[in-house]
Image (tube, rainbow, N blue to C red; front, side, top):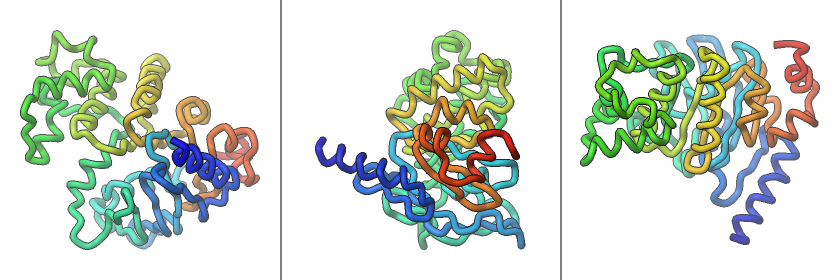
Amino acid sequence: MVAHALAKKDLLVTMHARRPDHVSTEGTLEKIRAEDLRAWFGANLALKGITLALVARRVTAVIGPSGCGKSTFVRCLNRMHEVVPGARVEGRVLLDGKDIYGRGVNPVRVRRRVGMVFQRPNPFPTMSIRENVLAGLRLCGLRPSDPDALVEKSLRQAALWDEVKDNLDRSGTSLSGGQQQRLCIARALALEPEVLLMDEPCSALDPIATARVEELLHELRTRYTIVIVTHNMQQAARVSDFTAFFYMGELIEYAPTDVLFTKPSDTRTEDYITGRFG
C-alpha cells in the first residue's frame, strides 16, 4: 500500500508538470503507453509522434477539435487503425509493457484485451439482445461454459439487466438509443477486456441517456482502464480523472482533469476549453 501511494504521488507530480512528451506513470499504475506514435491515412499524417501513458483503472478523456487525431489515437490503441485501406502506424503501443505492434502479435487477441465502443450504437439488427451480448465471443471462436451467466453478468455490468431480463429474445434494435449503447458496452464487456475505448459514446444520445452512460462509467472505472473521446467539455470534466488535449495531430497537454480545466499550462488548451476555437 505504501509503494502504491508513493507511485501515485510520483505520478501526480509528473502529471502536474504536464510535459506531454515526458509523462511517466511508474509502478503498477501504467496500463498503456504510446511512444512516438505516428499514424497516416495514405499520405496524410494524422498523429505526429504521440507519447502518452494511460493510468490503470482510471478514466482518461481525449479532447480537441474535429480532425485533431482523437479517434485515430484510440483506434491505434487496439490496432483498428490498420484495417482502414491505406492506413499505417509507426511507433510503439505498450500494453502491460509489451508492444501490441510487435512481430508475431495477434491483433485479434489485442482487441479482446482492448475493447471498443463506437460513436453510434451498433447492435446487430438480426440478433436478439442475448445474441448481441455473445456476438463478440462467437466472432473470436470462443464458447463460454455458461453463456446465460455471462449474458447476465455483462448486462448487469452495463446497467441494463433489470430493463431487459424478461425480453432477452427481442431484437437488439428494438431498444432505445441509450439502451442500445449500453447493450454495445455489454457486448464489449462480455469479452472481459482490460481496457475499454469509447469514441464519442454519447454524441447520438439524449441528455437522460447520456447521464446514464456517465453513471455507468463511474461504476466501471474500478475494474477497467477507460479512454473516452469526447467533444463535450462538461462531460470530460464530469467523468474523467485525466484529460489529454490534442490539436492538429499533436498532444498539447496532458494532466489531471481538474488541473487541466482550471490551470492549463498552454494557451491553446485554455483557448479551446473556453470556447475561443474548436
